[in-house]
Length: 353
Image 1 (spheres, helix red, strand yellow):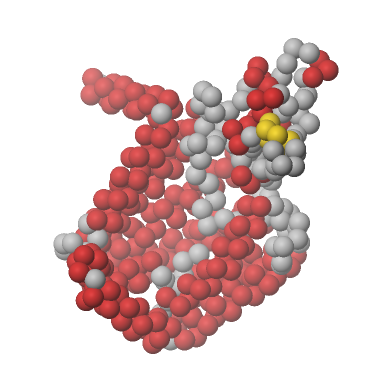
Image 2 (cartoon, rainbow, N blue to C red):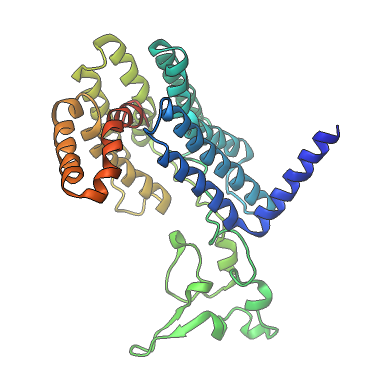
């Protein structure tokens, strides 16, 4: 009991530290990530150790984000059930690579494929529930977005309070104060200062009629855009694409082109059905996610069998050229040249979302 109470005491002290100094949380997470990169390819089973440390950093980040949201009352405009489901998906995304390589190390290829299938099935089931039961729109790969420790976490002097903005004069209570605006020298135009601006995703340079709306925007997530039938079909294809790839790969083999082309085709079709993001149909977060999916099509250059037949030789030739001709960089690049096949197999698999 004494040991348990001491652990609780240390946890409370740690939470207080993170609440008062959120940048400490970021420094701890970044230190763990740096260690994971430094030990990659350095010793036997370094891939497992590296991925364990990296997964620990991301899980710790998730825990920090949940705590900071609760401690500073940073509201998320979704139901509690949806919030929990998004946390589950995010947690799976953070640890799935570690689970895969651990299963392969301990059990072998059979364990690896069992773990991959299990993880992708659970993810697909939760995502389908979010879209078709809870009416969520375009889903992000990391649904529970990290807290911006500078923008979202209230700190003294960073976020304007009602006392700072609203004056005692009722007629001027909704007018920006001189401290919240700046006059441009050439044009004479008045714009809001960066210190009193809302988050980037909701930021404009126009002066707001209600300064309190700045506070209301902080920490808020824009509600998801309802999807029509064709857009739901596109999201359905995107969600089921990893399972479709795994199913066809089990029939045609890992080196076959059929699973690869099927996966690519489902991605392209999904993007076409979801629609053009240049209009005002989707909010900023959803447009960013769709743009990310479009850019992810280039990842097929690094995925087998295209990588094995075309990309691999060219990348290795470029890296070896740098390693042979640049002495200082060469000593750093050579271990990663040896580790590149492991990275390609671990991080550039087609069944990943």
